[in-house]
Length: 292
Image 1: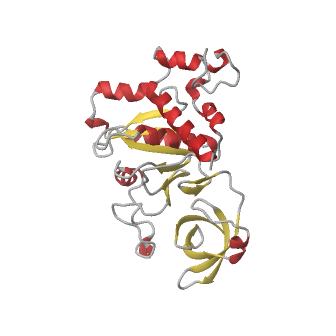
Image 2: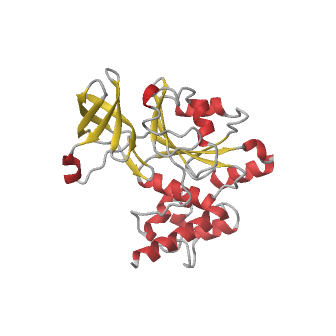
Image 3: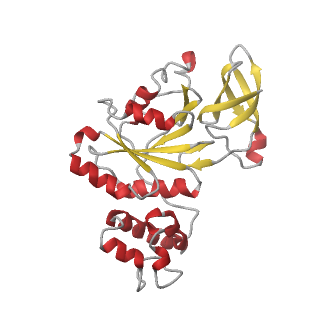
């Protein structure tokens, strides 16, 4: 029987299929032998071992379109990266890391700044200017005030989106707006799967109708960029692309080289200085990690 993993906790996977609803499954040992861990979002084959208790086993995992390790989810159309515009102040270095992390896996991104009602129009423009050339669409919303929610719904319709970002930025409030039935749809298993009312502890997939799915994920405050060499990082900063061909050296990494057109663009404001400083920090972290 075919289904989709909508939640996973401590070796138990909750598989949804139209015919059966949600079945609590374990993954067969063959996956451990293949060093393969089921992810939320996986399309799987499963068998029911106890119909009354709705228990079963996952027997196979279909090929993934893509997958992320942080958060651990698969088969996503886009990542909706959520930060607060204020209270707390957005950690833009972490935001840049998330953008690189997603780009490495060919996952499109939408940046949303929540609590936009708490900032001035000038600050809003400042944030927009930083990311307008990043290759990501930038939206400003207020989950509490309902600002920008309809526009966001249009951006996610017909797609499977993973909602990610740090804790305390309003992801749970937003999920309640996008999927009002989110806390009720699992019915009598809601306690079993330990979904917190206010804090997301595990990744979970919800249907918002019209072939629209949203993966809610736990918040986090740090992220190391892995799977990339420091000399490749420049290729994941879209703003550099226009100016890099004008650099004196073809292998320019836009740090200490003379005749660097990217650094000149930063100096005259054509490239965001915030983005460039984040690029430098991530570059040297990757370089340092490679030494070990």
